[in-house]
Image 1: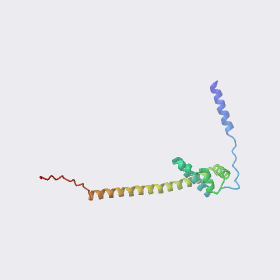
Image 2 (image 1 turned 180 degrees about the horizontal axis):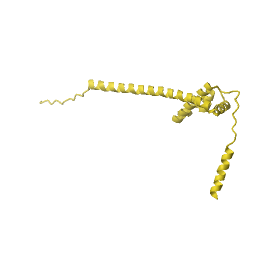
Image 3 (image 1 turned 135 degrees about the vertical axis):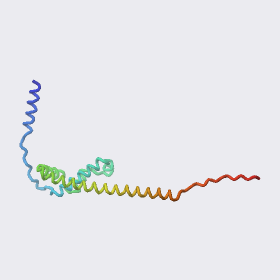
Image 4 (image 1 turned 30 degrees about the vertical axis):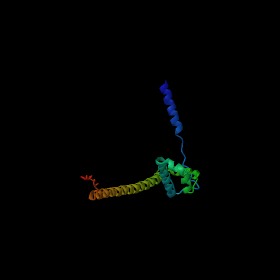
Length: 150
């Protein structure tokens, strides 16, 4: 009996969840796709920074969402409406998100290359210091006490 009741509840929930979803109207202040991509890029970067070093953001008084919205001169309602409009058309939204992902991957590669070059430069510097020490060893000369036979 309990199984039938649970099955009936699940079927009822599924039936109610299947309502018609209407396409949202195009907002009057729709954010252009290129600006939306820039905005999402900033969202991903700031969220990563927040995950890595939240204290630095707090110390500098940066509120991530407010910072991003003010940088792009938009308000939260405009972002929400534009995001809702773009996300309804999954192909279009996927194109925007893919461009953001490609940009993030390029930036990541640049930083990894810079980090690799810095590590290599540090290694070269350490090796040159080691070579110099081997070429010019500094030996301490011990003084031997001299005893006079007076």
